[in-house]
Length: 127
Image (cartoon, rainbow, N blue to C red; front, side, top):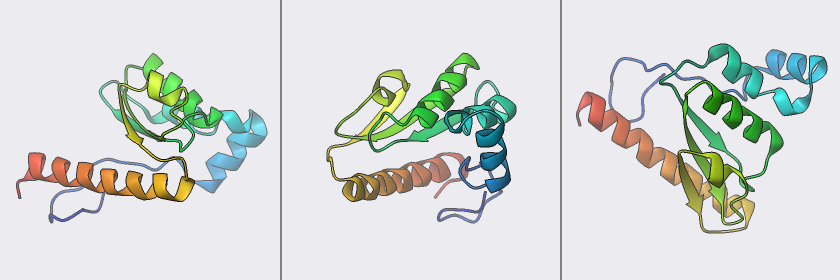
């Protein structure tokens, strides 16, 4: 919503991890596994993109969100580590950080996400 490198109009984006009221309400009313899928159900629209991050590729709450997204015709970009897990199989596109140590996988994910952000800005708003 802010910017990466280019001053531009905002793009619609939301982090499903940041609203503690939603996270606790869904976890209490349903189950922790549904904390992201319920948000995807409520907010996702056909044509949207879900970026799903799971170092192990097997986080149940992330996988549930991906499955919900696929049911709703969202595109899914997965980010996982060398263990792959189910996330690599059910994503439309999956970035695999070829490492098993969590901190290094996350550092590789950050670099890839920055590269994607730069490509999106340059493609839609020019350099």
